Length: 268
Image 1 (cartoon, rainbow, N blue to C red):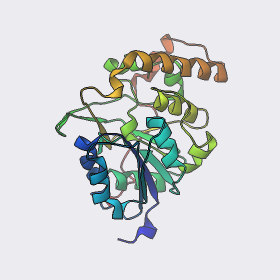
Image 2: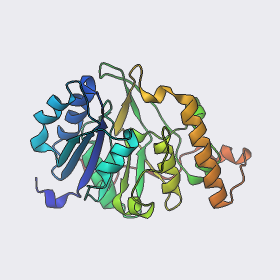
Image 3: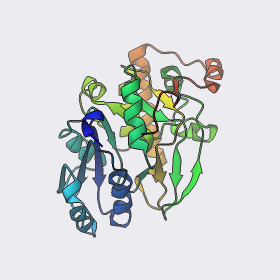
């Protein structure tokens, strides 16, 4: 398989004492056999078996380091600063991609030049043992729905959320927002989506790409702090767009918005 026919995809994994799950994360990426991949692991100075696992795969990594950092988003920014790919993505050290997802993403970005970032409308969820226990359906995405608050964490039960583990973007969009995740402790991903929305609409893909692994004690359990930061992101974004919330308008978002089909995508 000639890598010249495939766009370079750069993936960063931030890791800290994630040895119990890290290898399955790595395998979900490297095991796809995508021919033009740049994979970087930024470890925060783990004291478990994480380094042993990283060294096992270091010959397939573009770069890795283990040293103290300022947390998850600092590690991601550090890794992203080293990337050279056309398509960017990060995957936390306890989550996983689904098979062939990198090939699907590559085909989408090649076939649809107007797409600057994309997320799955069929996000998956893994249990602590690495088994998929749910794949949900999201109606669609739009900047308007985001600004109206339909994608805040509390709307998840209504089917509105954006899964970081299934969201990819072009390096050109990353550069437009300053080449780093905004400075938030918990809701850095939500803040990044808000920054992206200043420049481009999010497209939805009716194909599962990745999944979030639910593990007891993970950072995402701190929902209160996440929600407070997400609300601040929206407050600033609404000011940027001079946006007034209209709850009646939300009814318009019950149908798919900005949805990509696989009709133009080869089976790779």
